[in-house]
Amino acid sequence: MNRFLFLLIFSTIFFQSCDDGDIIVRSFNFDNAELKTCGDVGNYVFYKVNPDSKESLSLKMEVLDSLYREEGIVNYALNGTSIVVDYRTYDAALGNNYFCSSIPPTSPNVTVEYVASSGTAVFTTTFLIEDNDGVPREFEFAGDTDGDGLDDMYDFDDDGDNVPTVFELNLEDDDEDPFTNPKDTDGDGIPDFLDNDDDNDGVLTRFEDENLDLDPRNDITDPTVGPDYLNPEVANAYEVFQHQPHEYQIFKSVQITLKDLVLVRGDEQIIIETLDMGTIENVEVITKTITPQP
Image (cartoon, rainbow, N blue to C red):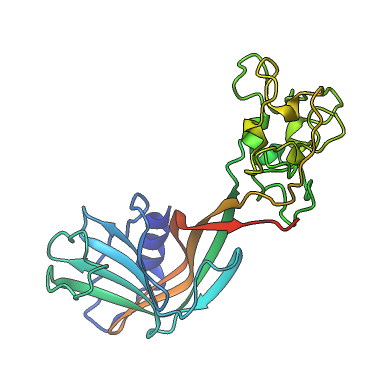
């Protein structure tokens, strides 16, 4: 679609030249090219390469802040200096590090170059949060079940009992659905991963930790039954007020669209209303570790 729209506009209305009237048709076909990036704060580069036609489209941004700091849509005005879109053709195929080399490459040679004189780069950044607790996002309960300051989607221990959620599901039982029929040891209607007293013996699971290592799973009085926090016949309480460190990851993806793009080469202009540069999944991955306070 991008190729068709470009050729239609290029050959009828928006091609301007002071030459002898000949129209040189560029392929400008990047539909199947992968959007890639390199650089960092102060020197971002996004680019697409069509190896068949030896052409490239690049966006260079000297932005002194993280492009992915916030989730949402941000517009950047192309100014030809610090935020630049460049379309080029070459006399040979590009090497893998053409756009990312610390030393500007001397080959291949640029045969045609158009630089954007105006336009807007629209960045749409989305976040995917993963707490690795085994519960898909659609089954995460809204809010903060254990009141530790972390929403359940960030919390790998949703009920705050120092038994990670992933160990309180029916993941080992092929006959049970861990989300529509979650494990409920005491049968009180509250699934274990949301129940801070799993065996309903009156002692919070977190306090049934005799060796005080912040892991109730290895405190076992009766091996035939299992851990004390799942044994209603054992109700010994110990002063455990600390929580395990909580770790979660934020996977950031970005989609880039160029709007009202005007590419200029001498007296020639190429005008494109909308050009989807593409999407980069997991362009940035942030790991956060937080220890909730009791």
